[in-house]
Length: 139
Image 1 (cartoon, rainbow, N blue to C red):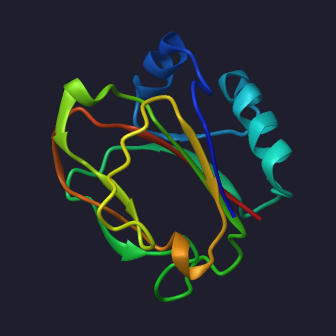
Image 2: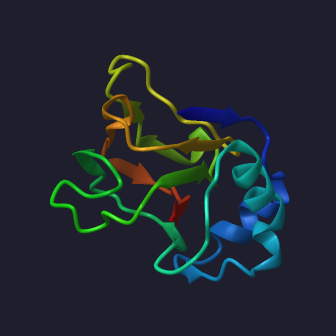
């Protein structure tokens, strides 16, 4: 399962969310619409140990699933991400799914929701500049 919802947040919401790299609460009012969109897409739960955070990881991420290549997040059933910076703010930072390794995804303000079938194994290239992503991991 993989769903893309364009314009899931407004530009102002993106600015607000990217203002600080941090863990957030699912009760944060800025997440209300996003959570509704996620829960309309799949049977995601915010029960513990689910979590949400804003991340800026300049070194990127190697190929992985969000249950963790070592199974450290085996509880994770669904993931969601929203790119919070327009592409003009950074270079690199491409997001790829394993089944489409030549199709980079940037997706500013797009909500991507996916489960952990092998096709949804993904990679994020390193970047320079300002690239923040809202990440959510659901039980």
